[in-house]
Length: 242
Ligand code: DC
Image 1: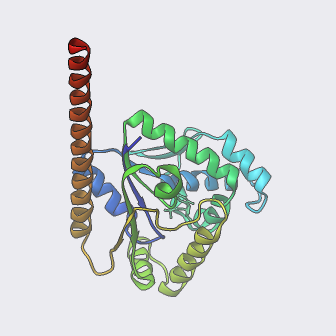
Image 2: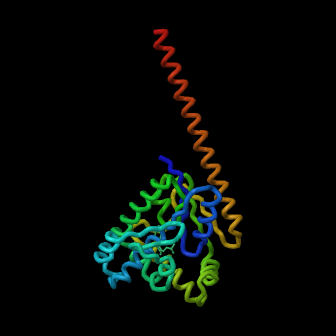
Image 3: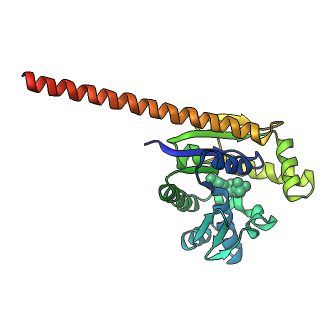
């Protein structure tokens, strides 16, 4: 079944959050940041003084906590951690814990339930179009050059350009080389390089692609409905005549 989902995947600093939020507003769908969910787990791992290298212990944390992501922010076990999850400590371990299959299984289940509850959404992450929602109405792989990505992060959170570039490339390496749902463009996705482009321009391209996909689905539905009606008429005529 095709879900009213726009999947936006891509590496760190490609502009996914800004673009996904704006697309959600433009097309009238809710927005889900799945990176924030993995960050919530990383926060709980650090809170509980669990060694991030211990997969069994990390999985136990991921399976026992409640992570809620909504437009107001992120909470872990009822505590607002919106700011904490963006800190250097969480950022330095999140890719490690996000590579563990039990953590990913729990997050995938939560993400699918979220979409069912909200009737669709613009979902941002690394494996949304490849694994979580392979039947999404629209799949975008958003990228940008390493230099542009590092410069954007510095503008957002400050810090040294070289350090940030190193940290981004290390996270890219871990996210793209893990066995379970590595970062890569999904089949049927549109790749957009946001280097040197404005947010409005990129958002406009995605919104237009969404309209085209939705129109295509509506036309296919109409064609199928017309086909069914014609077959029904033919069968009814057969019965009456026969
Ligand atoms: O988008 P972000 O930087 O907030 O993501 C944090 C980390 O979570 C990132 O290193 C990769 C991981 N992640 C993931 O593995 N799968 C997702 N769907 C989203 C994020």
